[in-house]
Length: 253
Ligand SMILES: Nc1ncnc2c1ncn2[C@@H]1O[C@H](COP(=O)(O)OS(=O)(=O)O)[C@@H](OP(=O)(O)O)[C@H]1O
Image 1 (spheres, rainbow, N blue to C red):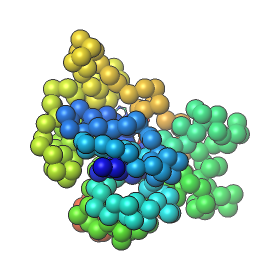
Image 2 (tube, helix red, strand yellow):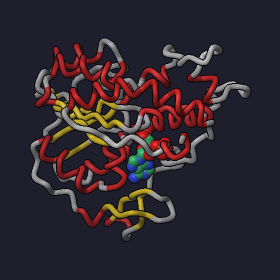
Image 3 (cartoon, protein in one colour):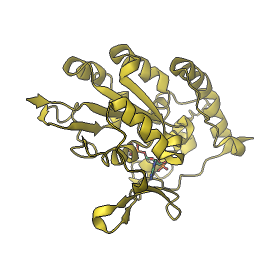
């Protein structure tokens, strides 16, 4: 029988999708073909699989045609979305672009997210991606609330085991991820995975995860927080849940 993934981490870019995928792979029944197989955009071929196949492709979240494509193939698929403070997400996204040399040398975070007149550049994907509620409403229209699970990226770092319990319940598998395998690594400042098969050596995520962010000024941060606030409030109402997105608040006050 030909199968497509039963669970998809659809995003959001720079919110912790890779960590979540790696943790879930510790479950004996959960298999992932690769970190980002791009099943629904580049490699649109259903595959054979007898286990719970999971894939993560953060671009799906913001791709207009993907919700319908997935729905037409698999209306009951379970979707997981990781979201974090959209201002921090934007900085993380820009930091990645800088490190990949995708940013001109005179480009700063401020210039990327603000227009010359000081208004928010709503055409920038770095800004748009953080308007989570705009994309989520489409996903909810197709898949309904019961098939979409929203994870806090901040909780995923602070309490990975707690998050994983809720995700395993959502996926419908027994809670079999061994909590001893995930531990907080002080040097990295993030949780890492203990590799039993490799003498308990640590598997931390590469330098592209949890890196130092580019610096930005408090006025830009304030503009962004003001911009996202109404969208966030709408999102919290929509989800019936609130996230504490104020880590940078002390800088702007
Ligand atoms: N355990 C662990 N180790 C390292 N990093 C962790 C971990 N858990 C969550 N995170 C956060 O994941 C952020 C990267 O998100 P993604 O994996 O979704 O990025 S990507 O879109 O796939 O490029 C990354 O963002 P930055 O800190 O901005 O680099 C991390 O904050």
